[in-house]
Length: 483
Image 1: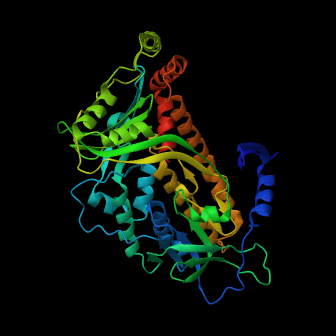
Image 2: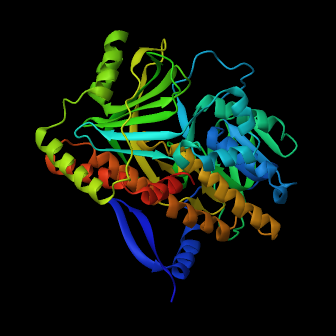
Image 3: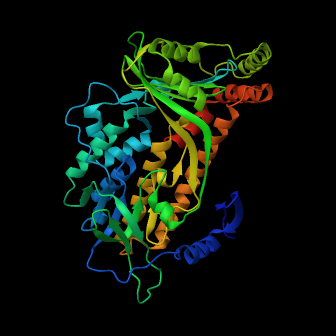
């Protein structure tokens, strides 16, 4: 009997699900995805043909280019990275920190190390943290995550600009294997048909704003949440806005500290997080309503700092009923598991913010129903976009890079066509099995913690307290998030 798997399909009005066998799924996908409603040119012309073109040179796209360029089975393949912006060069690390940072998991750090970028990152600037504390503003419930009693790093906070600069530096050393075109805006994609017609092209055709036309056997779309590749292919996307914005800023702490803990508190209006940057500075990510976000931007610095400290320290959202029930439940758990759990720590207080570091951006969630089409694969935010509360956006993208590189390497080793559906389907299946549960969990947490209704508060209080008393469960959660 074939193993039953769940295929999540994007329908016009939302998500539909069906259960089919892997064999049936493979046949259906191969038969349907090769056919794209496209416009075909009158011929291929004399444009250059690449084995792989990566569209988008952000963190994930640049990592993909490095990963392919270093793979021994792909040596001799023509690989091109297209980036619409300027080359990101960082000869000297800026004195001030950037507001856009990522929490890099051990798995992502391993990938970056494997492509030679991690040593550049550590030579520039990064901050490891060994513990994470998450707690509820509507109760005393909390959960902590750490590895081997703080002996190992949980993750690393790195500025996005530094990750891109490190990958760019590594790409410079791979110029024999990977060509990079900066300031190269794509204006049109022309898609091939799976079965040759007299007037069709065999490869994906890419037209740039300067009039240059390129062709590729495999196009990798790494062009972000508003992906032109995904849009032009007509791939359905399930997406919705959360009616929230994230306010980010660089925080100056009241006093120097080891600062090796990532702090996150769930407020009724959304989560607020403080991520370590150095012994004296941290990064703020405050997800809240659009109205409150605009108000926070308009506050003077002193009032803004007071609002941050109040958000982390105030107990105004707690009720006596929830406190009594939570305390009783905690006592029962302690009697059953007297040595489990972890003590509460107090977050550092904030004294000021970096000049001109307060900005906001809208939040949302999106997931492409398909990661692949004939000779095309989507990676990173082009395939999936998540709420920042779990810090998993960049890590999901780096996971895509590792998986797709491995499958393309195997295809090259066995002499297969890099753009063939067989291994692209393996990529999609593998990554959706990882990404969909992660995205569902993040979305559920966001919705569960966006209310101060007593039943919901009690449910999450009991759930958080129970999970905090089960080290094995917490280790499984960390292991899944670290992939």
